[in-house]
Image (cartoon, rainbow, N blue to C red; front, side, top):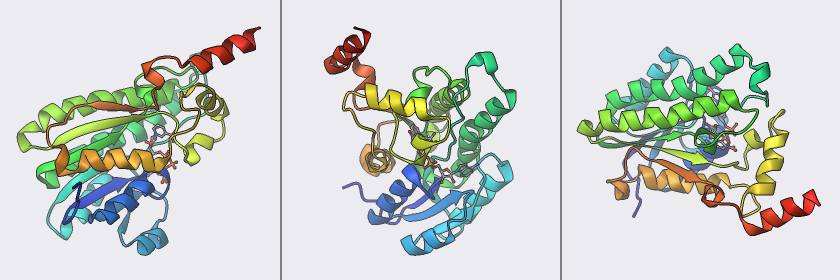
Length: 255
Ligand SMILES: NC(=O)c1ccc[n+]([C@@H]2O[C@H](COP(=O)([O-])OP(=O)(O)OC[C@H]3O[C@@H](n4cnc5c(N)ncnc54)[C@H](O)[C@@H]3O)[C@@H](O)[C@H]2O)c1
């Protein structure tokens, strides 16, 4: 069940956080993994038994090269996880900086677009693509216009790709996590979001990267053959409604 034996997987942004947890899980499930990360991951890849290809997902040629390298061994890619992403410091629209918006779109959106453009060329029928969006792609967070916009676009390009690639029997889904316990959650300028997450997530804890990797694993496996074009919230119940203890806390604070 959920075996990835004999599968070739490409995971971007896998030198840390969610990508690294996913890489470890995929290797355990039998996959041959190619990491596409901007950060030198030679030692990490050697230790894990996978391959690092230096990749900047915002650069089209760089992503093309990653897909070509990954497909060389078995002549195909079975699974593509477009995970690499960045968050920008908290800044309201009143102070919007065009360069920050462009950077968010270049990495968070175009990284996914390039991944799908070049990845699908090497995928056999029955392949799976998982894009990493965010809960910020589903609901708005004040101060995160650049990030939210780029992640909302990932949700929509996922739907478009799912329809376009259905003929090739390639499934495309995206995941929308709330705050995950990785270095991104503790990024400078992100302090407010971290406080908000800890105060408002119904389970009163951050999501662990392994919990996201488990969903990516399921979505990538052949056991998940009829699920495509979906954006799946992984938020501990955040979007289901407001938990009573949180309301009590808020009312208590207001008194
Ligand atoms: N941590 C969270 O709270 C959270 C919540 C929702 C969604 N996400 C999304 O999950 C994904 C992974 O985030 P994470 O929390 O593991 O963060 P992380 O910062 O721990 O890891 C991000 C990885 O992406 C790599 N990277 C950054 N820019 C790159 C580029 N241009 N080309 C290639 N690689 C690049 C980094 O080197 C790093 O290995 C991101 O897309 C992020 O937006 C994270």
